[in-house]
Image (cartoon, rainbow, N blue to C red; front, side, top):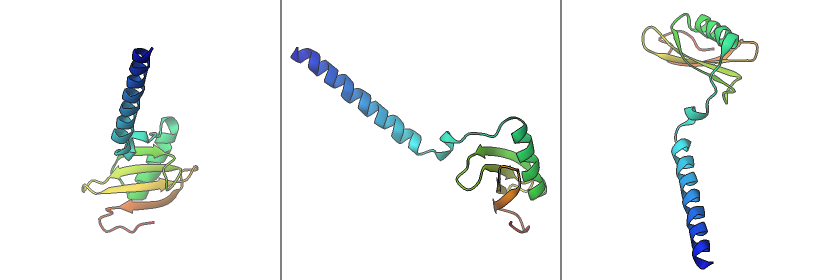
Length: 105
């Protein structure tokens, strides 16, 4: 009986340590939990973001960003990056990043 309890305790401790390790490992990457924009919403969000930045290419998206409903990351032709924040209706709420001389919203 004692041996069985020792085995169970060892398994519980091992599983607990493994879970803690996974939590710590995944906690260092905030992007791991991001939900990308998909479907027609992706097309609408991309078009709104690219219109706001005057071009570039979409290099990342997120639904439910901490700053807005949608976030679209745009890499500009010159290499700078802009995070464009959009509301549910795909209106630009704000943008932040390397604008290379253009004004921020």
